[in-house]
Image (cartoon, rainbow over all chains, first blue to last red; front, side):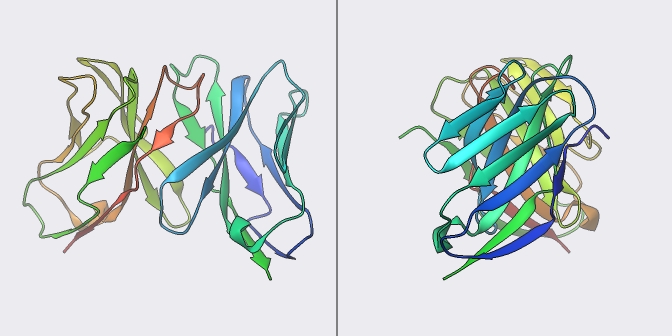
Length: 112
Length: 113
């Protein structure tokens, strides 16, 4: 499988702390995306970073991409209880015809 | 509101009884896809469509059919459902494949008994 792999599988933090999730992948990509899923609901697109970008910000989210290590990280700063969700990375592999391959996700729990 | 609409939201059916899960998007997206989500296995792609009348298999197409006769609709058909198709199903669409973010539907929880 060419899935991305998120790490850790689960993360529990206190409100106000920062949360960092990592994603590793296997082959060359066009871009990498992060999604959030609240329990049993549809995934919501958070941010897309292209292979020629190294860092991207959106509000309290910061995403980095290291293509030499084939890895990405998602940082959520000043977390809130409402950030409790599963977070998935998805990769658009070169030659994939535009299909995203999703990892298994990191389950984030933010305690009030 | 830009959205992907899936129906039904929940479905319980019996083995062998044909069913269709509908998916419709109102964003004029070219690309549409179906995924199933199972505990411990993540999201796995079933079928995708690059445009009208253009469909192709994903990673787990066995037991499923799709069609794309109109740009906005991409129904998922289970001709003879079996219990191993019990899962949470998601339809997604994108302007043009993986170069853009996907918009997901709310999901269909299917139970086959």
